[in-house]
Length: 109
Image 1 (cartoon, rainbow, N blue to C red):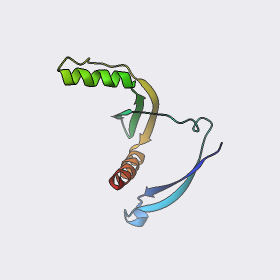
Image 2: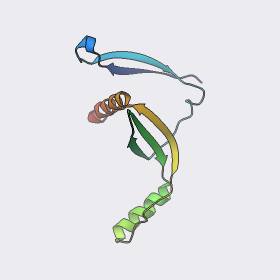
Image 3: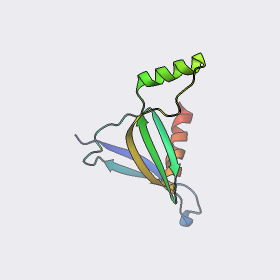
Image 4: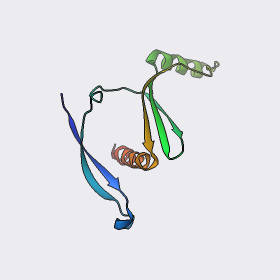
């Protein structure tokens, strides 16, 4: 099963005077990219010239238990176990472009 996605990207260069330029990129699935990953939370860390995004999955029962503890005023554990779905390292520019695209998408909804 091969799926292709046309993804518009923006690139800012000195030649365009820092104006956004949109180019369509046809992305083809790699060997493991065809497997969908589900995440219900994300964690972001910054590094030198890179942004690391960890996508994770927290069991729904654990989420319900935490909500019940909060509502009842009981103590919530300091740490909760979850399963990492995926870790992605992005350049700062790619992270900026991702944030821009997400903001555009979420403003429409």
